[in-house]
Image (cartoon, rainbow, N blue to C red; front, side, top):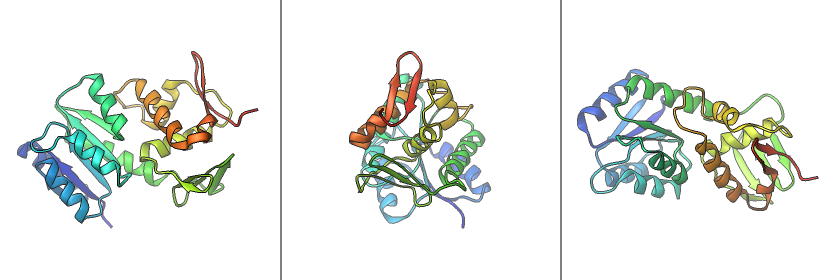
Amino acid sequence: MNRRILVVEDDMLLRELITDYFAKEQWEVHEAENGRLALELFEQHAFDLIVLDIMMPEMDGWSVCRRIRKKSDIPIIMITARAEDDDQMMGFELGADEYVTKPLSPRVLVARANALMKRKEGTVGQEGAVLAYGQLSVNRQSHAVTVAGSMINLSPKEYELLLFLMKHYGKVLARDFILNGVWGYDYLGDLRAVDTHIKKLRAKLGYEGRLISTVIRAGYKFEMEA
């Protein structure tokens, strides 16, 4: 079954170009020219991925991302003409998984989308399906994350980050090692993406956020407290 994507971009020529590239890769593509239409389509269809422009009429990408994240952890790639770090950090704070600046290459955008979906769909290993530390439990087959029996809603990137930390239990991981392992070597952002996602992940895990410790001038470590 083909993956289904929603492309939200007010520039008609760019939107059609992106659509053509995804269609060639056998994606089922739906288009929206503004934020309000995007939210309507989001409510009507089950998408696998959203490519979301930031600067749009009627409702900007920030607002759309915020509304979607209240209901879904669907992967979101945000695109913008602005390259400022603050914009990128805002996207990550709102729960975006990737961030691409214009002028963009549709071919690279499709490659990033495919890589993001493979990481999301391929996080289940052959070893034990359930990982548990303290009151934190992660079922890698269903992607269910619970703390003390209560379901925790993580974005795809937060889920990947948690599994990556668990995989390296007890080891001090440098920020650049985490960035390369979770975001990939071709990611153009900076190390603050790691800090932002760690902060959000700890907050969502509540008391069990203690499992992720900061090692001064070194990085982060996932480990039970002594």
